[in-house]
Structures are given as C-alpha cells and as structure tokens.
Image 1 (cartoon, helix red, strand yellow):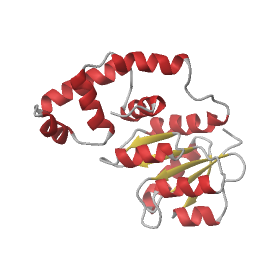
Image 2 (spheres, helix red, strand yellow; image 1 turned 45 degrees about the vertical axis):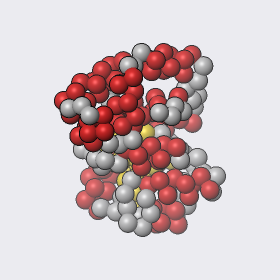
Image 3 (cartoon, helix red, strand yellow; image 1 turned 90 degrees about the vertical axis):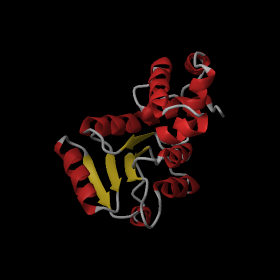
Length: 203
C-alpha cells in the first residue's frame, strides 16, 4: 500500500479530516478533496490510486463520479461510503465499478480493510466458475419467502416496508434476514449485495 495514494472525496470537512487523520496515522498516503468536481479537475486518478467517496454530495454523487471516471477510461478502485437507506444507490455505484460500499456508522478497521481490498483489485480475478456455482447453491437453499425478503433487502427497503408488502410482521422479516445472511454466508449487507451482483440475479 506504500505505492498507493488514497483520495478522499467528501463535501463535509470534518469527515474528510477525520478519515485523513485515521489513514495517515497508519501509513497511507492521503489526498483530500471537497468535491467530486475538484477531484476530477486535478486528474488525481493517474497511477496507483484508491478512491474513498461519499455517495451523496451536492455537486456530483458518488455514482456520477464513478461514471465520469468510466467515461475517461480510468480504472480507479473505489470504496463508497453510504448512509442508511442508500442501498439502491450503492448497488448502482457497484455496477459503475465500486469495489465495496460501507454503511455509516462504521468501524475504522472496516474502512481500512475495504481500502486494502480495493487496492488489491488490480491483481484479483472476479468471482467466476466454481465461485459462482457455490453462490447459486446457497441461493437455491433459500425458501420462496426468504427470496422475497432478499429482494426487498437488496432494494434497500426497511424491514417495516418489506413486512407491509409481504403481510408479515417486522419481527418475522428480521428472522428471515438472519436466515438469509446465514445461508448465503454473508458477513454483512454489502457482502450480501456483492454476492447477488456476482450472480447478476433478478428477483
């Protein structure tokens, strides 16, 4: 990671400073940007770089930023930070090339591992072959109701909304969510979403 520069793009100065301090203290080279527009204007995506960007920003969203990079042919491994209820936008960001997304609030170690994972993407092979087959087997183990709940979860719906649509209690939705996470062997929501995207499965 000594060869990589981590670029932090966030419109909130306290957040930028906090993330910059955290990453700097553990040895990352860090550059901070107050807007996606400013980041793009400086062309800082040349060479070995990683991007940490907020999803919702006033001048340009994290999704728009990744799409702009794609238009320029810039393969920048990116970690997107999202707030509660941003799952559909986060999925769009991953389709635009984001390596990972992290929900607020998050532990420092989670961000650090996500950045390391993003930097390693230049050398990694996407999930394919046996990996996809294993995911398909896990998905096939879900009941019909669990698949219905999974559809709502990946769409970013809160438990109450899923419960209303399926005419079940929010508590039952929580039980189904726990079963889904266990059967899919997902450690967290971003991991679950990555699995579904790897399968390119429509519900």
